[in-house]
Length: 501
Image (cartoon, rainbow, N blue to C red):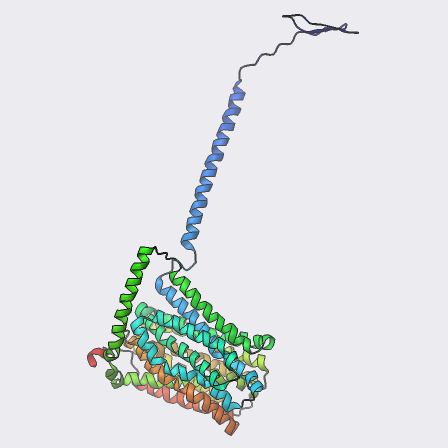
């Protein structure tokens, strides 16, 4: 057995025929390689810290940039924001206008309406539309087009949502559509006031085209969405859903305008005092504004009368086809509800492209030195003569197949969008100060075809059973005579109506 011996101040050893040398442990001083490794580790740790600092700073800068650039339209010029939101309001506007032109077909079947009654229901919109034109222009001048527009959107949207609830009671149904007309009736004057105050002349055709082009987009969306909604959810759904869209626009507009401002108690009190004083001032202006409007000078101007008659003529064709085109395609061309509605999309869809083309052409001509009056006359003549020719071809018994008639009418009605660079710019060209009131005057007369023409078309259709006599012939007459009056008397020359008065 091996023996283990312990001795002080001596090493341990095993004695089993074998002995081991003594082991000593001493900490050795660091070598040059160890120093290098420590430096590398320290440098790496420092680099990590610096990288984290840079990353943190970059993240902070990115967050700041996102805050500065969100929402995407935050840094746009104010006039572009106003034009964009106004155009979106006009999209909703025509969605709520055309929904009845599709829903009237199943509604007539459900309630047993003939063409005369259907025409009466559709024309009731224009009663309110006509009544609100002059007040809309007057209010836009006093309170600003933006404020008048948002109130109008709220009125027509709520009234649209009420249509299904009142549809079984004819007076209530007519009243709801009148309210839709009142809300939508103040919108053109409000938009015209906004454009005249905020958009320079060289951008005006494009601004008008973009805003009023929203009507064509609204027609497309309304006619595209209405048939599947009616078939799957019932005709009531188009009024509920489209009305909700307008209310959502109103609420979103409030957030867009005031959501970024936070007021403390002191500034809130000051703001309320300012609003009270502003309201008192506005009411004083409102009381005296009617006396300040140069009504006499307006009606002594031949150019104003040319605008009035041209607006009447253009509205006769536009409102009648907007109201009756789906029915015409359904009954005359024997298309079902979905096909009739989708085919009715083609004219406003094509109008979107024509509108942009016409606006660019008009602005380029004016920038190139062509007289503004000449540009407006060219554009408006195209807007009148094109649909007149196409309607003539469609009304004659030429043996054309249905889809050729659809194509011809689509081309004619799309080219009528040249009016947005003709008639609809002339109010601002003539007098930016009174542009909203001038449009209120012409649009009041322009609403008469919606009241008389839409109902008259239904009556003539019941009497003659002829679409050529009831729909096409009157429109052709007004397009041709409107062209003649416009070419002879229209003018875009700026006028100081206050001095003339």
